Image (cartoon, rainbow, N blue to C red; front, side, top):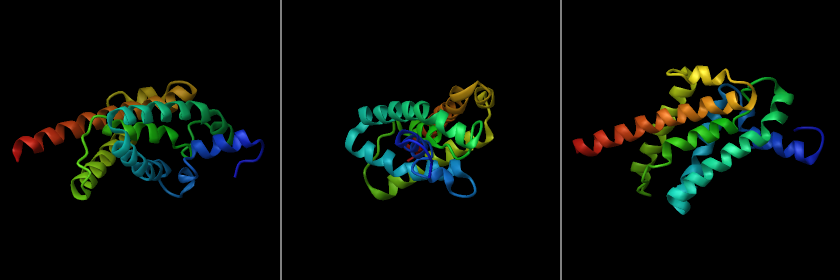
Length: 164
């Protein structure tokens, strides 16, 4: 737990997504995976406006909590996963969920996999964005990975709907 003021503790907990970023081995993957239920609940109750609000909220929370986590863990720390939460939201911004378990779990897992592939491999300019200074580099590479994952997920769903 973070020492210091309650505000610093709150920023620490926000940046690590309630400690998900502290899990061993691949904290970004854990943070993204554990954020999926939040995404699904917001999609269920908030539809498209809720999803866009969630994205804005995670971006703002990422910016707000970055400094505390960088001071605690170092530059672009793996424990800081709020940036992954923001990026993981993007593949689902325009996806119409069916609110039936099997189709939705397939969509969620596919979007998760696409996002993690782009976030880990960092192709197509993602690596360049990561090199930006401070909180911008920490967040913007995940945003672009999310955009690429959205394009891939939308493309795959389009192909599947036209093949069936």
